[in-house]
Image (cartoon, rainbow, N blue to C red):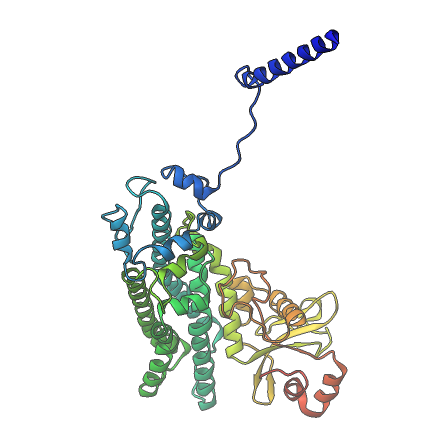
Length: 452
């Protein structure tokens, strides 16, 4: 019994010694258990002058900044400048031509207010980039349209019919350029300038206001029609010259719309109900990240080829152009049996199927396009590229599919459906039979569903 008792006493002392030594082990170099990671919001509360991690939209959500702004006292009525003043930034002035800079964290603004004002700073920088992009966009479109009209629209003759066709082709082209190319290109310019994909055409239209959007798409067209009835232009260049004047006014109106809309957004309540408020624009950290800025030459280089291709497609569409696929065998005098290149846009590929870009003139097909060879020589846009791209787009997505109608133009010339000329597939037996009865135009309209 005494032996057992002594043994138990020894074990108890050993256990006590182990318990005593375990905490000491930490001080002898053994690693402690890792602490539980803190949430970013807790880190900001405990250390408001320390960035918990890299600025990003994810950090915005982790810090619950949408809730912070929503619940900030008086947020529905206080302006950006007043919000900044209340949080220690006395000279935080935003707007077009203004570079409001919140500075570093805690100099002087700290905590969640700093993140909010940093996002406002980046939003202001972006809107200034959009403002500048309007001018760059207009210059690029003006140059491209003037060049294409000069190269591809036949000089005027004394024929009344030719004068009417000149008016129709040029007017339709300039109208489409205004509505389609310029706005999509503006969004691309804005995105490239500030490294952002925040704006779509719809978002930009909504933000700058319906009046400015209507001005941009309709002002030049209506005035151009009115003026052309007073003095008949004699050439495509005359039409373009008239158009260019109003196009410049569009630029002024567009930039004024951006200026006014930004000023209204900054001066009204940050979360003013019933409006597209600044709090809505900043939601989920859309602007909580510094953006790389690109120069105008970099932007123009990225979009030059795409602008030329898009403008060319719009011009061809305005001329009622379409593609015939397999309407004739590859037995021409051009490459691989295509038609010769002079005034023709014809391609024969490895499949031995001829594809031609032709014009619908009433019920007749016009196979020639004035100075068509300049498209390849001057702009380096091949007929192969135009025809195969259009056929690929139509085969995959259907006729007239346009993914860029309400979004930014791509920077890659090989992007899907940048070329979307309608294709009449004359290899179809039913269309071949109908061609014998009513000709290519009739067959392509009736069975091919082409709007020509």
